[in-house]
Length: 509
Image (cartoon, rainbow, N blue to C red; front, top):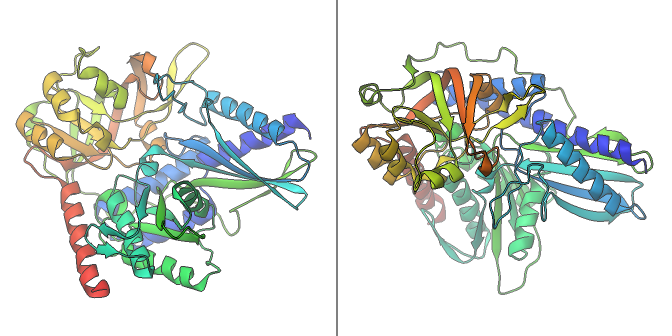
C-alpha cells in the first residue's frame, strides 16, 4: 500500500469529520428548526447552531472546540497490514492537531500532562475487523466530553427516577432509554442523538451503543420490534420539553438507534451513548492498494446549506454589557435576558478552578467574566496566538469550586453550557453573580466574536486548560441563573421530570 497516500486519506477523513456535518445530520437539524416556535430561546439557539455549521464548513475549522477522543473502526481485507494503518492514523492525527483541525485532548491520567498531539497510551482508539471485501472501510467518530459524560448504563432490574421499577422486559428497556434522555438535560448539547446497546456485558454493551451512532439517521432498523421502539423513543422524548440546550422547546431528541446482543442469564444491561447535535462521524472506503479514498459515506441526497436561514422574527431585547461588570448591573439581570458582552473575558476550566481554590489568580478578576471554554488555538509564524474554535464546555464539572471562586476573586459572570447546581446558585445570590448559557458546540460562531488574544497564563496545564485572555465583541449568551435565586435549568429539569412521571402513570401503570 502507498502509505503516504493512505495518510493523506486519513487526514482528509479527520478534517471532514471535524469541520463538515454529514448530510443526514443536517437534514435532522433543519427539520427540528422548522418545527420550533419562532421567537423562543430554542429558536434562537437553533439559529446559532445552523450559522455555526455553515461557518465551520466555510472556514474548514472545527464545528465544536471539543474534538473529543478520536475513535476509528476499521474493516480490512485479509492480508492488509493493520500495523501500517495504525501508524498512518497516528501520523495523520498529529498533523491534524498541528493544523488546528483537532484540539489537543490527550491527557495523562496520572500526571495531568497534555501530550499536545492527541497521541498517548491507548489513544487514539483504533479497532480492527477483517472482512471478505477487497477494500478498507474506515469509520471515525469525534465524540466530545460533554456528551460522553452523559452516557449512562442501567443494570436491570432497577429503579428509574420518575418511572419506577424497570424490569427485564421491553417496558423496562423503554423506561431506561427515556430516562437516559431526561438525565442528559442540556448538558449534552441537546437536541441530541442516542445509540443504545441492549445486552452484552458492561464493556461490550457500551461498544454496541456507540456502534449504533455510525448508522444513518434516516435508516430503518431491520428488527421490526426495535424499529418501532426507535420511533417511539424519539416521539416520546420530544414531549419532555427539555428542548435545544435545555432551554425548553419542541426538539429534545433527533435520533435513536438501538442494537441488541445476547447476554448471560445473570446480567441485563441497557447501555446508552448520548451524542450532541454536533454529530461528527464520517466513514470512507479506501483502495487497499493505492490508499486513495474511493467513496464517502453519509453523502447521499442534497446537502443542506444554512446560509441566510435565521428566523425572520426580531430577537428580544438584548442587554449590552462591558467588562468589567458592576454588581448593580448583575442584579438588574433576570433569567431569560439575552446579553451581548464586549471587553475582556478569561477562560477557565477544570484545572484552573482547582488551581484557584488554593492559589492567587494570575490576573485581577474583580468584576470580570470566566468563560468555561477549552479553545482550539493556533500559533502563527510570528508567534501570535489565534482562536480557531471556542464554544462553551459543560459547566457542572465546576460546581464544587465555582461559588467559592466567584466570591474569593470578585468574579461577576460565568459563561458555560448546561447550567450549574444549588451551591453555585446560592453563591450568585449572596455575591451578586450571574450564569450565562452560551450555545454548546457553536465554536465558530463564538470564535468570530473573539477579536484578539491578549495573553495567556498557566500554560503548564495545556492549551485547553490554560487561562486565555480574550478580547470579545458582541458575545451573545442567555441568563439562565440569576442573582435572585432563579434557575432555568432547575425549572426545566423539574418540569421534564413531572412529564416523565405523568407518562409513567399513563403508559406503564
